[in-house]
Amino acid sequence: MAGATGPKRQDTRKFFENLSGAGKSIAVLTSGGDAQGMNGAVRAVVRMGIYVGAKVYFIHEGYQGMVDGGDYIKEATWESVSSVLQVVIVMLKDPAMTHLQWPN
Image 1 (cartoon, one colour):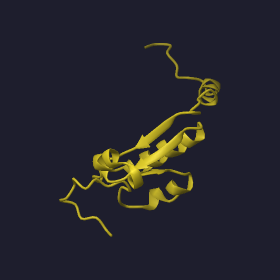
Image 2 (spheres, helix red, strand yellow):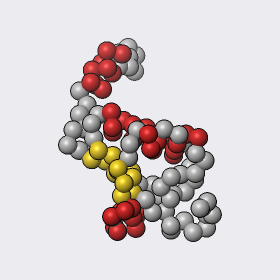
Image 3 (cartoon, helix red, strand yellow):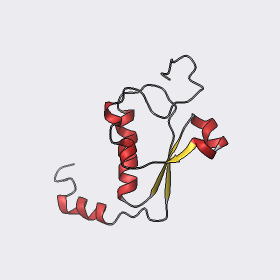
Image 4 (cartoon, one colour):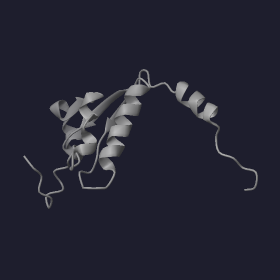
């Protein structure tokens, strides 16, 4: 691809300025298994969602939490992911992962 260049910095800024999450919601659900980078990915999704104006929710206890709803679904805040990079386990564990030992 001779002559092809990546997006210019101004184009990237314009892209982010035009993003709007107003009136939209995002739910964050993980399988609960340990995976490198998952905490950072969850943090990035939450912060970007909040940045663009969307409501972001955590679904605890995996798919069962999504089905049961109620207290298993909680709104995420900027502060709720502020120390997630220092946490060693994935916050949104799935009870189907019974072979893993989760701290209390």
